[in-house]
Image (cartoon, rainbow, N blue to C red; front, side, top):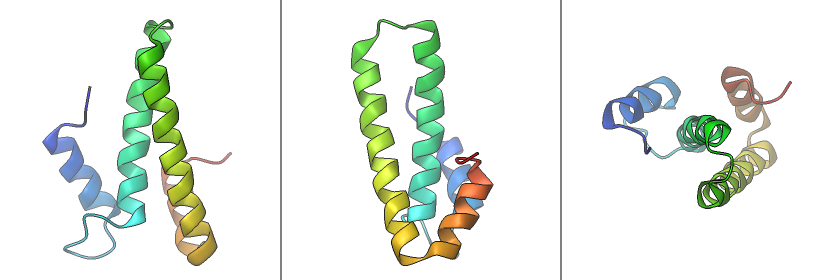
Length: 89
């Protein structure tokens, strides 16, 4: 199930860097993380859904690329985002 418009606006409002920001790495990672969490829950109840598993792996790879970009270019923003999303333990 894709992100609803309301949920997307909520994520953008929470993670945006400035007032008109909709595409910063922080916002993109937050939206990907939400979608990854949804797909993870779906796969817990549908373990043989291999098409969704492939989509999940693609989303994880995209999030990993964005996080690597942030870590390389703006380490403090990266650390703040990881803490806010609770990605690293």
